[in-house]
Image (tube, rainbow, N blue to C red; front, side, top):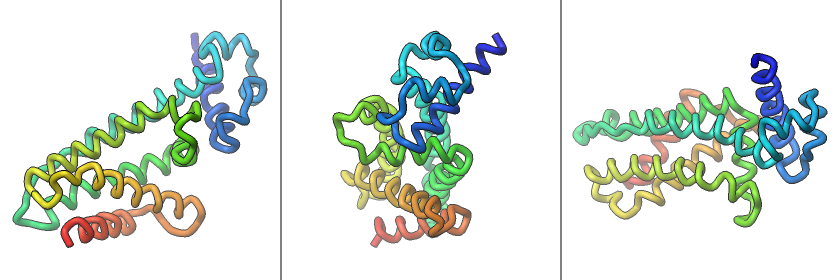
Length: 199
């Protein structure tokens, strides 16, 4: 069982590295098995196909991220105090994206690259349910906020999209060596975003 578990994990890690470096379509089963040091039958035993490997990666990483995101998206209204109202929950969200990216850089950057794939691409179709869940969680957060800040009513989806886009843009710059994803950057993103929605 231990060897089986090790083989499964090795396949996932090697596939993730290859998908992250070269994209999903350009990586074949042979390359994954060679990189992982396993046979094709071993890969098929665990995952049935390359698509199965990709789905397993999403289940392991994306489901974990969405569960963590759900936990930090709890809004506690304190409308009388700007810094204690929306700021803390949005800061927690940014901090999660940053910390998760640092810990799972290959996976998260792979996701970002797939976000620009055509709607008909296999990766788009497979990742769509996880992506929708991510946005649903953040939209629900803004729905809660809008109950106390009426200027955000009917803008919850746009707020979620713009907020996540700001976070992802900074992650992209960080990866290119053009900025940091740290405590100061986290605070700046939230203040900049809040200035926009309250101006």
